[in-house]
Image (cartoon, rainbow, N blue to C red; front, side, top):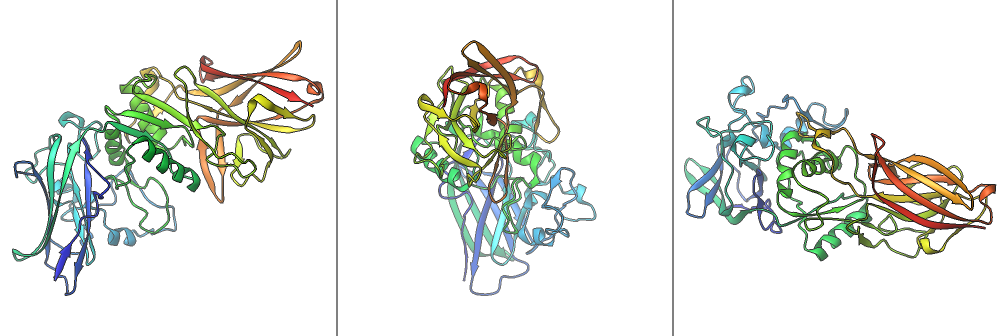
Length: 462
């Protein structure tokens, strides 16, 4: 007895986003030996029953994978250096017929499948370059078995069909309907630390936002069990990723926007290049009111609040911290925090305290001349908000200082930096004693231009 399942696209995936490739994964279940010469085929049929795409693998455990493609990124040195685990894991995007002559079949999309005794994986290609309807070139320029490039798969209803045969004898089959459509609502957010991920899943469910968790083509899953982001052929991954945001109403959750993340280096600049990200009808921005999903030294849990239409900078809280606390570094265990002040209408500190002011800003439009598309489908961002200007007004005295907009969170391991947040450290000095200090914060870009948004509050010093 042989049986096939389809696990990717997952049951929770209601449709495939128009303009991107997708993966078909599943299990091979059997109680007798799987023949070495079994043939795995994956078909995509349109609503009229015509074959829109087909993929075939004629060998079990086929390790003809071209891993020397420029632009591939792997795990750090010491983790699967000889790639044997990867070959057993399967990476059908780079399957070839003959490793001695990979160039002859690397772009043939009809052979991009892999199977072993327990599972199968296959790539279904839409358009592979912008000329034929892709939103970004995937770097491969896939074609059919006759060398013809694919046009983008149209919107509509389709059926995925998987077959396992031996000598034309059908061993097992599985099928499921799928739809190709343009997303109406999307979210851009990060998924760590755990408390933030849990908050994002719940936030998205409540707002009716789609979070795609299925594997995107070009992405190398954590096959060794260690969750390290962004491994594989990333140009393809990024080309497929931007399909989520073409016409969708987009929600940004500003938290942990790592400067090396796809969110910052591809998704945001792509949207800045093609759409008006300050349009309140189609783009909304959220953050935590206290800057975190939760704080241990505060009874309040973080609440997701929306930036107002004309609001670009928000002060979340003031922490009284230990004197050794570092500029723009926040330990999630709060080992550097003495107490947190989350109500800025009643912000009182003492002379001699060291404080950290935690701010979050939302990104704005940037002139397209500052957004340069790179070969790997990331963008170089030549100008960006990156400085906060502080004014402390003490009666007839004004103290001005500038600080970098950047925040690093540290847990058991560094969680990378955050471009649009800051954790700026200040000493409460003798001249501030027994005064109410009017604090004003504004943002500037790398060129020294003042950006939209500011924050004001009163800090009482005792």
